Length: 348
Image 1 (tube, rainbow, N blue to C red):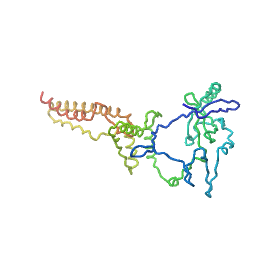
Image 2: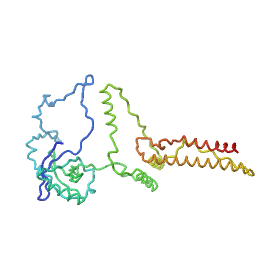
Image 3: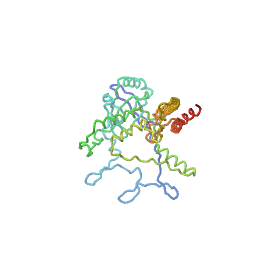
Image 4: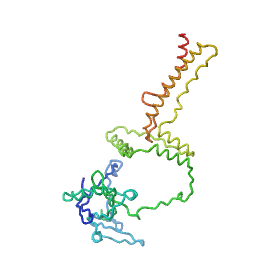
């Protein structure tokens, strides 16, 4: 990694020399604008609007347009004279609980590495901050802009997260906020059950960027001259008017315990004729075999639901059967019940 900033952490009378490194990087696929016919790169020129002349980078300045249409031109000297007292320092302002900082304020994250001479005070502040359970609220001038930031500990390293100023966060102004929307207690309880069903510990490694993977496959296929295969389409779910029914279906899908409507019901056992003990015993044996078989089928069905429980991905259909135990043996076991009764009767 290459450092992007060098300065000190100012902690009371203690100064810790440090460097900043970008802690994140976007994995988005970058493209160039090219001519469609031959792929030739398209270049842009800096042209003055007044006369159409090309302007070199050395003659480019920053301009601010006033409400009356006039432009105020600012040069590098104008920016250099601005009072940025924290231009080379991370000033610790106070220590606050992290849960009190709304994540909407966070912008970008940077790793903070100490110089060799500042390793000891760095570790001292790091351990003390980790023990306190708080984060440091700091002020820093970064990229010619003064910003608030938080300083916290992650994997033994300080992470500086720049923040937006309060006037940079927009207020939500939507019509529905002024409407009186009634929510029934049953609906609230059902929504809470759905949340509990989908509750899990945060593990970002379980998720991937499917769009980027598909785009990379398209690029590799075209580069190798192979046929580009379209990814499977995902059918959009249609909104339902019955909120309770949608919540119940969502909970069932998350748990993987939806009833199997394709499994036929087992046939009814043969009636016992009065006054015929032999036939009654044979019918009872057949019925017992049928009950045992259907019991095994129910156990298999239960196992299928248990095996399908962890599959909670919203992009894939829920699998309700354990491998090797489909609904077919269940139907076959139900059909074997009358066959077993007929075999017992013929052997008698």
